[in-house]
Image (tube, rainbow over all chains, first blue to last red; front, side, top):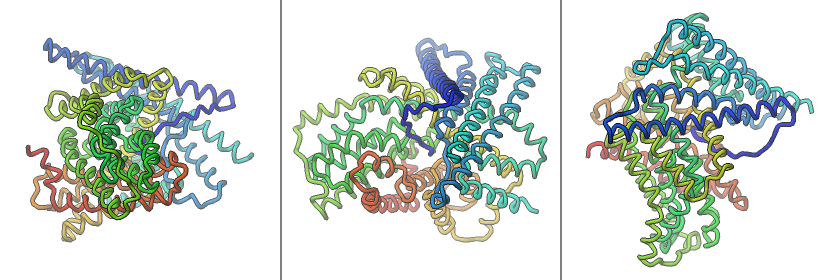
Length: 174
Length: 438
């Protein structure tokens, strides 16, 4: 949905690897939320500074850009762990469970491959930016700082997708 | 092969992948990547992927989306829904069907600080459903009014799909929010009229409640001050140009969090639930954005959208026919897809067509805003139509004693009011533009 309603089922995966992925992805999600709160506080400081003392936070615009990019990427793995990414299930509801499970496994694997490719490409992009010293306009923040949290996030997203695929494989056999 | 053919072939592949249960984001990404490699070669794609994620996620205007999501999460924990419902009920609860109307007006009020229809339906449902049941409202009326009222969450700004529309079409977010306001109020009024008519036909569907004294009404209204203040600051601030939308959303988020904390609704557990809920919704939206980005870069390479627009405009059909076809496509897609994916998939293709066609001699900016509001209203209908009416699902999961079929039946009159409103906006664009002309 453009829209989501989160219901925490408190369901904890049995397998050790599942528990670890669950913990780490939740940790990333909370970091993302805190990053958003921090971003809000900074905007507030900038507004107060600008209206009362004629002194906005220097480079608030760039900080928002970098922080929101980080927050967004860090949210990705959690959503896959709770299978929150949306699918259209309208055309396949009538099909046997087995077919649906197989399609879900394929979908998760595609997501895993995409996430790992992104992880690889973003890493390269980060090194390039690091080498040429690209920085933001006002604060001269190195742009690669924004890329750095993306690398583990995409890696974790790939792992989460592999894990959900694996759970489906186990479930299909049982 | 021409660009149009390439574009259509890849679009067909994407729809096939969608139908086969692939994540919407991945269907766009995979089909778009295949198209990209086809047109530009693998190196171009790999090169593009180095910076695509950061470039897409660090767009300043987009940062308003996770903030509004977080604000909506805090709002659901803040006890604000109860105050809104009580106030509405104190004012009009003594009318026939008045309590259902109060629920709809409370949905509108909640929509003013929450950009999510599902959250609006769920939060208001929690507060209003037991009360409606206690006052012997018919189950059909109670559930349908709340499911329909929930769509006001997105129709009344802040509204996430409008932000996405603004970015896709390079329009001003503040202006779109203002434009959505009057149509949003008309939507609320329309739903209330529907309830009124239904209760005239069948007085047992919504019995009148007790009249509340004016001092009681005043007291109930005063209880809603946090919502009014937050809305005034956020929307007033954006409209008056005091803040950027991101700054306004930041203030709104902090204020809503403060209210939720003050009311005691924000302990550690619900705070974590807010974090997780925000992460889920953010991830869902932004993964689709990344997929749509690849798809749209490919489409732009083939020049299919502009070519297609030229072709459609060149056919010389009447503008109204073109618009009618577009609306019908949205209504159909709304049955199987969510509103945001729909907008991301179709706006790059439909927007050039609309901009190339003359509607009542509107200037380009007015036309863009008008079409944005229209598209928003049409895609939102998908939330209350079968087979996948998410709002109805949510309300049904709360009112377990009411069969979902009953709710879908009850929705029909509300759908009629939606259609009437859409026709009104099609023929009188001034409804959407009036707030901008003041």
